[in-house]
Image: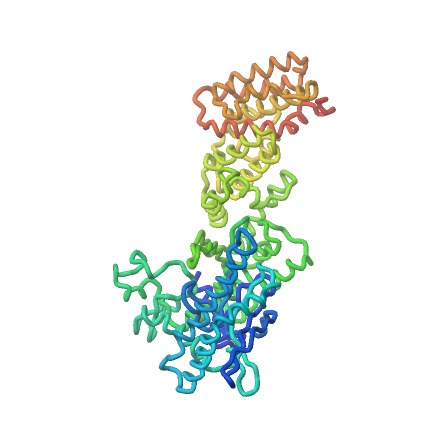
Length: 600
């Protein structure tokens, strides 16, 4: 996966003619626009000349010379984001919190930069004097600068991004820090020093596989692990051996960084509350072929976002391009990297490697199959609805692990245990059944998931071959092989018959008192066998046990008798197939009442 990112970065650098400095410079993480707060320093008279405010302009990113750093301490250049201040209990407290945040950013990110980096040996005497003069002006006027900043941003919305830096008057012109060579030199030098302490000479790079003059253990591109805790350091407690964890040469580090930047800007997608990077990897072909593949993906995303073509979706992302990827030949593979940021670190939630376009095509074929059977649009949303929260009152999605595991198996073609799925299906189905909520849509969604997984070959059901053909055989086979067992068929038909009774009760009494016999869908084998005569008797009481319902009851009884005792299905499975029968009662009724619809 890292090699694929490095190849994209290398391609992007060669294509755009970028150098190391181009890669090091970042853009602030502004969602919409943003403002730049400029502290104006006049070096002709060593004076602070107020605060200037301007709209952030991406074209000027080389002038802003921004690159983020650690949360505590200065960035590699005197430019920093101003975090939002804490909310106060009243206006006075909110004003105080804002001033505290501005002072903290100014002192910790701007003033401290000059105190820490203005006397480096790599600077000339003139450069040292230049930086010292700026630092002195900032220190002398610090009590005036913060209030001026506060006044300047008073009317800026709190959620709007803010970048703090300085503007310097030199030789009659006002210039940004990116206009001065010394700040560029500082950026490159500081970044080089970060990796110098955990490096080794004449070692092999883990990315390009060649021996280099120097490799570092801090790639700085992905924060998958930390080197400031002993448990993460190869070689025990010797941090000098940390380079062994992830040895990367300087060239690969730059290419990795550019590759990640390109992928995050172009191939980042949302996935039901999660976030993933789509990383293409070319298997065979020249750099021209790589250009072609990336251009196809970029064009696909542009086309999808403009909605100029009819496309199929398997996720909730409007700019999803998976169906277009499925049309590509198997000359590339796709990696899916699900990441979650946790403070200054990153956690890999899931990495799906080397997915061929033909596999994506197979997934869409299974989707089409489900859509054709049930006449609805199947997506991963149907799966996510069962694997989001164990309790709707919880704030976090505590079932992410299970959901991502299923996603992984869908793309890799790994088997899934049906009983595992049904356990989560029933948790949601029971909730909706008891609350008299969205019972039918939830059951239908569970059926769609089951057919989808079965069509992909991820779940299998033991078939019973020696059963006699039933009048309802078309219904059984229409929904896959899950009803290939007499016990399941009997429970399913009993569910359909029960639904016809509930329909009758609702038509005559506007109530469904018989639901109390269904035990909130926690019935076992004994409950099912005693339920059938109860349903028959109740239909007799309503004078509604006609020929059609007798046929259903007869078939259900036949299958339950054929199943015998000691069913090899769990309570969850029993109630799942019963719920399916409740949901698909109309399909069963259409067979026994072919000429006219049942009155109820």
